[in-house]
Image 1 (tube, rainbow, N blue to C red):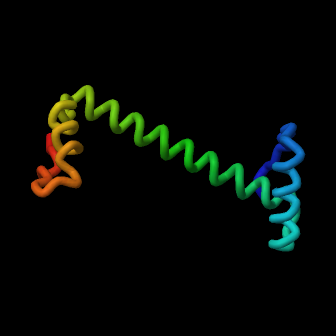
Image 2 (cartoon, rainbow, N blue to C red; image 1 turned 90 degrees about the vertical axis):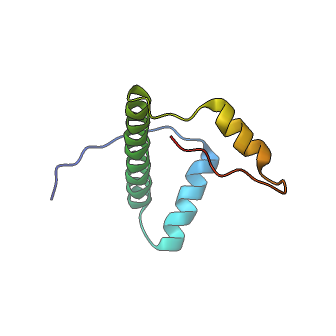
Length: 88
């Protein structure tokens, strides 16, 4: 088994009650539910960071779309003649 550490957090009572309800519904411990939730959040934050770094690399490489082109495309949506999406 992997080494484990205890993390402590103070959460609002309403949130704790929701965690307890989920744990009861799933017939799992509160700790199991918290571990699943924390792991999912960490994965989401890591993906968000990866995507941000990728986007910044695109900007550094000049792979951007002009704001006016995006605005013109957005303004054309819902009209009889929508423009094609702008491209780099």
